[in-house]
Image (cartoon, rainbow, N blue to C red; front, side, top):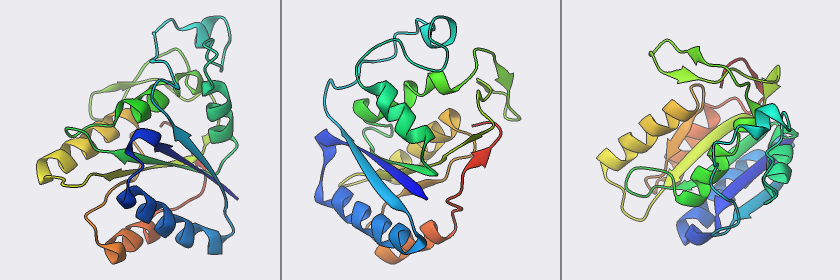
Length: 186
């Protein structure tokens, strides 16, 4: 089994390192091989909405900035974990770019979800389980709630963990997650 951990190089803090250690200590005994990707400032361009990933190069972004290898590593994994610094209740710019650039893995149509929002349907029969781990030095309840809500709008079936500094609570949350590939809508 394979886990792909994506973090923001601009927010490589002691807190993120602690969460990475806890996660790896949890996953390795379960047989996961772990690969890491640290995204640096300006490493990934923002999605320009050209839709070439649907029309000219189906399933792959036409921009050549490394996102193709990131998406390929994601799709070859059983689980993808995003270490998301929470900035004003949202993802950091680097993590947001990685999330937005997931678009080639979706189809160019729209589906309406039960909550009334729209989402692109899946391109493939199954995907890696995605997990978002939010962290910040001082995180308000409002920022944590906003981060969770925004994450759920991007991915409907994704566990969202927000670090409050309690290792035991963090490990309990991890134990409640199935780290197997998932099918259906993201």
